[in-house]
Length: 399
Ligand SMILES: Cc1cc2nc3c(=O)[nH]c(=O)nc-3n(C[C@H](O)[C@H](O)[C@H](O)COP(=O)(O)O)c2cc1C
Image (cartoon, rainbow, N blue to C red; front, side, top):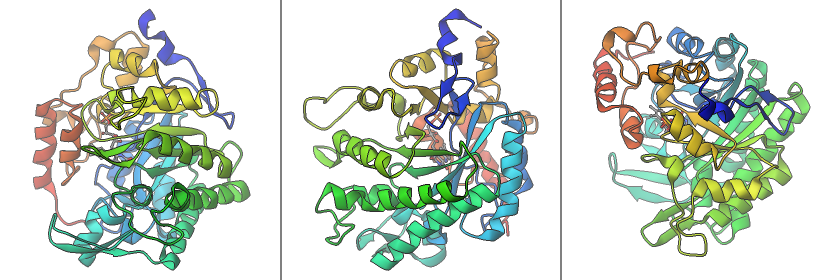
């Protein structure tokens, strides 16, 4: 191994005592290769098995906890007991080389594009009329519906435990339901989940974490991992949806109600791990990762994600975080980390040819409608994204 990259291969101990062998994580990414009902397919299992040695900690793509929270047409579900056998096979595949498997649990709220396609409306914190991708209504969730969603996260955690996962990740990254309640752009409610205070904006996220923790405490094996993924700042021009300070306060409260083992920082855009704080104030211009990491240092491991596709960038990110999540690089080069560990970083290959798909266990019909997500980050070369776009033509409706 190149001496320069040595610190990437030091172990990391999570708060629950789990020892991770190195500082890389296979970050969550849906391949859109499950069934339309959210059942795991053989393609999903092969894809995961091929990446079982890609990183010690591996996180699945979003598994929706509620059919009204389905962002990806062919993503997988954690919303029903019928999902458990497939999830079990997925967990086994991910763990087959000694790694740890985490199931990511999500509700995409008003960004549930597939729910919109299916039902013609979506749910969010507050009523809205939106025009994209077609004119539609966002219905405000009632308090009873919110309570039911919180319970659905708890049920999905039960299923993750039953399926043999080593942990769950609750995602509140930008656009997902929990985040839209936290955002003063999206939340116009005035009730106990309303926009009037940080406490009320935080309530749904904290209720979810409390409910998930309670299932973990009652039913999970020792060292079950609980992660949280979030976007620390939301701005539009000079307007602020929420600040990094508010986000940090939310995570402090989260630590009071749940035993979090890590915080993954996520955001869309090119080289998101280099994002700077935009809101005016004393920390404007500072690195988002650094501010969050310095706050939680020694208490909560912080993961950098977004754009980390070379060893040099991994080192840069590790200067201000505890570990590194890579998504798209591990699609095209599952040995991305292994090559670095063996001093073969020159062999890292982010280009891909059609004839590589089989060896990489990439389903011949995958990434339908979600290649634009790869364009946001640009972590893969244009040619690779063009190839993935061409796979859309292989799609037949999956039942
Ligand atoms: C096709 C695609 C699917 C994704 N699916 C998920 C997902 O299910 N859950 C999630 O939290 N992030 C998802 N992401 C975001 C990635 O985890 C990651 O933040 C983004 O790709 C940037 O990281 P990278 O440069 O390492 O690829 C997805 C990204 C892409 C490109």
